[in-house]
Structure formats: C-alpha cells, structure tokens
Image (cartoon, rainbow, N blue to C red; front, side, top):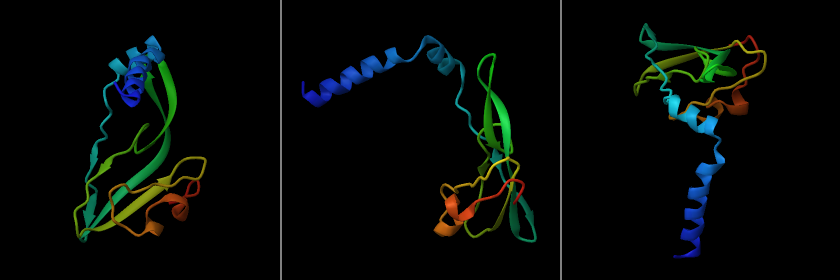
Length: 126
C-alpha cells in the first residue's frame, strides 16, 4: 500500500469518529433541502424575478432553532428558471440590516453584473 493510499484510508476511517453522535443523528434526519423553482412573472416580453434577502430561523436539529438568512424564505433561495434570449429583470430587495450581494451562479454575465463587491445592496435598498 502506498503512503498516499494509507493516509487516505486512515483519514476516511477516523473522520466518522470525529462527528458527534448528535451531528450524525441530525444528518440522518435532515433531508437535502432543494429550493423551489421560481419561474418569474412575464410582462411585455420581460421576465421579472422579485427576490427578497431576509432573516429567518430554521430547525436543522429538532428542537433547536438556528438564525438563518434566505431569499424569499428563511433559508437558501429559489432556483431561478431563465431561458436563453429572455429579457430578464432581477429585482432584489435587501430586507437585512446589513449590506448584501447576490452571485448569479450559472449566468453568463459581465463580472460587474455578477454580484460581489461591484453590486452591494445597502439595507432597505433594491
């Protein structure tokens, strides 16, 4: 057995021991969260997606509420359905008490339009 394979096998076998029983039990009880689809609203050939960054609370472990942040819900955000060639408007409202931004995974847009420090949304702004 090579040194690399030995280290991999030791790492994988001991990794499970590091998880507490409560963490392992929580992982077994919590199904994968798959966000709902958001098709947008079409008006005059423009598709508008209204998105709201907001605080929430989510129960990851039974009986324990965890403060979370989500888009249009307490945790995570919707999956946006866009079609090539659509004229799209993303109306993002920051209902948080701090600055935020969104990164548009999967969209082929210029860097200045892809979230991050170029598109900070102040608290209460759109």
